[in-house]
Length: 118
Image (cartoon, rainbow, N blue to C red; front, top):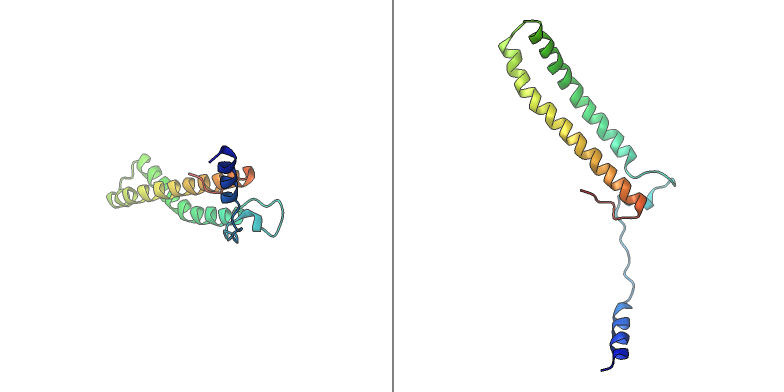
């Protein structure tokens, strides 16, 4: 078998019947409006949810710290603050992760990548 036949065989193998492409529902090319970044509305709703969760937690921690620094030490309030602090940190962590994921998808959409990021 000569090199020409091998190349011809490789060329024929690459010409298969075209498959019907299934579109990902998150595909930015499916947007109704041109120029809209992928997931902007979803990000806004997600940030609103994170803010609704984080603001009361932060307010409780802030007021507890103010009372503690003023010399008003209440063990029950401090106990609740010990539980609220990890919850607040978890909400912040999830928010940062969501923003990073959104940014990676946006960068992939701009550069023509797959849209998934780490």
